Image 1 (cartoon, rainbow, N blue to C red):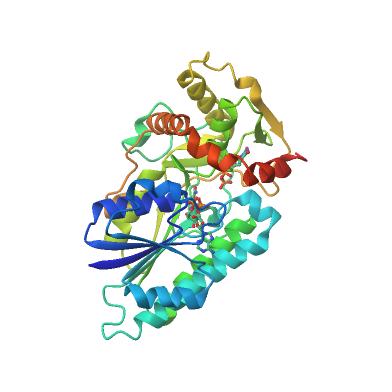
Image 2: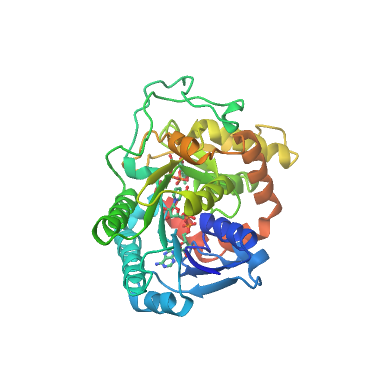
Length: 377
Ligand code: NAD
Ligand code: TYD
């Protein structure tokens, strides 16, 4: 029996990781440690909440004493650390919360793991601290070819209709960190602490840096779920700047599969980049989302294009993210399984079929926050 803490398991990616581990490994005990901030939602885990190998603990990762107690109580062998503040726009308004949760919270997890594990007779043997990070720590890539060029990678997923790169440079694991937003600066700092715990104390750590995820259960402040919901309700779609920024999109279950593989097979002290081989300009992805929502709702495809509203750009808006995840492909045999066209169809369908999940979030307090956030745009 392995006892594994997954932090942030009630959030978007965390809930997919918890579900995968609880279902795939009945002999593991999965302890989901989550504070349930605005982004945490136990409705994301309804289907597995009564499984015998699953425990939910409501706790703040910054609360060191409580985290120590959880380590002791559950005899923890491994940590998959996802809990974080994750939205760039919020980090611009409130950087302190990001430093607190992402830096101090990660430090508190690391220190609790260290103090617990170094006292055991077997010390680090069989233990693992796996930190989930973002490609945003590398900064921004230039967009050198706005029309798009043939990318140097091929995967099953990338043989879809759309597969272009908007520059010849990609994020590789050896790049220097150059974060620009308070969010990415806080994640970069937490990554450094994780590596420092390996280099200083010998803790068995792994860090992965992943590109933008999309799929079911994503909080509707992020581009794709926000826009799906707005199109449904025929509300304006606030496109930052000219919509030219490029992101590399990965279906969330493919990320969860990569996490499973790396947790079990990844080399200690390594970094792996995880990406979709799937670059899109925001404006292009928005058009695909509009067409898909319209079609699935029985509207005329494209009839909601006039909801597109160009608004003031995000401060310090990173131009292009593009991941080279060929190390992970080469060393551990992972690649994305879904072509983007399939992934976005599944995603839009899920949100349209789960309107109650969405309404629960978008009514009440969050609606007021969202209105105030966009009032002066
Ligand atoms: P999310 O915002 O949907 O979920 C975060 C979860 O962490 C929530 O359940 C929240 O309640 C919990 N949490 C926040 N503060 C906490 C605290 N102090 N103590 C305990 N729990 C706390 O985030 P996400 O999009 O699922 O991202 C998960 C992780 O993956 C983050 O570390 C993020 O940096 C990283 N990541 C996200 C993406 C992406 O596209 N979403 C891409 C790459 C990496
Ligand atoms: P987001 O989902 O917030 O992820 P990230 O900032 O981590 O990449 O945004 C994805 C892209 O979409 C990013 O370039 C900002 C842009 N965007 C908009 O144009 N309008 C919006 O309302 C949001 C939320 C994002």
